[in-house]
Image (tube, rainbow, N blue to C red):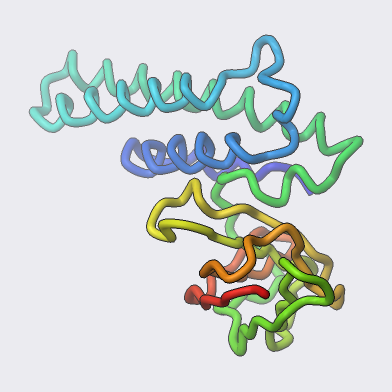
Amino acid sequence: MQIPTAYRRMNAVALINELGSVAAAMESNAAFKNGIPQGVPSAAELLTTRERLKYTHEGALTHDSNKIQERKSAEAEAVKKLDSVAAYYNLAAVSDPGVVQYTGFTPNAPRKGDPILLMPQGVAIYQGPVSGSAAITVNPLPGVILWELKVGEGDLSVESNWRPHVFNAGETMVVHGLTVDREHGFRVRGHNRSGAGPWSPPVTFFPK
């Protein structure tokens, strides 16, 4: 599975969101567990580029030709940096395919023949096989080849408090290492060859 390149066709507002989403995902992706390789922008660099794009976009709203050119330059810089991150993910995926399951990149438009994924239904959380674990079930969803699960602990309104997990369709979903007797949030979305569907609403659970 390759990193989607929908960002290359985005306007400034969409690129601003994309930079933030990709930067957030880099913080917990295993592809960067040993640091940021030379030539690949860090999450901090993406956020700096995001701020510049926000500033130039606001300036271009005056329709000043110089401001519009500055915005175009900032858009090009954003795409170049996202290209570098995407290329590294694709390279890292050769040895660890799981790294491309949660990258923050917006999926490409559905391919012809791929069903549009719906929001998962029937998400339920149960006590797992050992202390500090949980088992997750969800109703089958046509077209899903992978399930992406996020588990949140602490302030569930803070995205960085959610950890991603990936399971093949049909695989038993069990997560370990949870804090006993503390509230955790769980949400699920499906993936097909075209990308990800919408997230389920969060469900909370207190593991034993």
